[in-house]
Length: 69
Figure 1 (cartoon, rainbow, N blue to C red):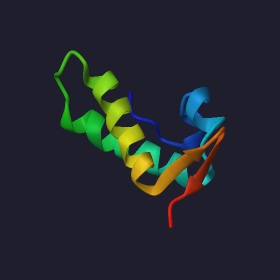
Figure 2 (figure 1 turned 180 degrees about the horizontal axis):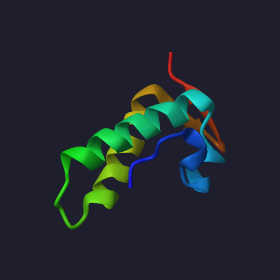
Figure 3 (figure 1 turned 45 degrees about the horizontal axis):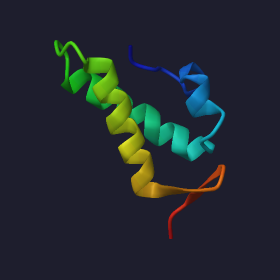
Figure 4 (figure 1 turned 45 degrees about the vertical axis):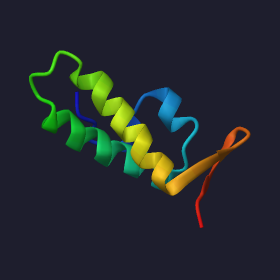
């Protein structure tokens, strides 16, 4: 299901990503979810694409996500 707001994201996303990272995740997830409509793995694909989008802008340093230079 698409996420309307960052507060609707799974706790595993909200609890780890900074606000900008959550925005990226939500936008990428929603776009991928719509693009893969009808696929039986639609939600799984959308989550993978969303994490890939976050990793283009952020890198995880131990337990903290920091923005790439």
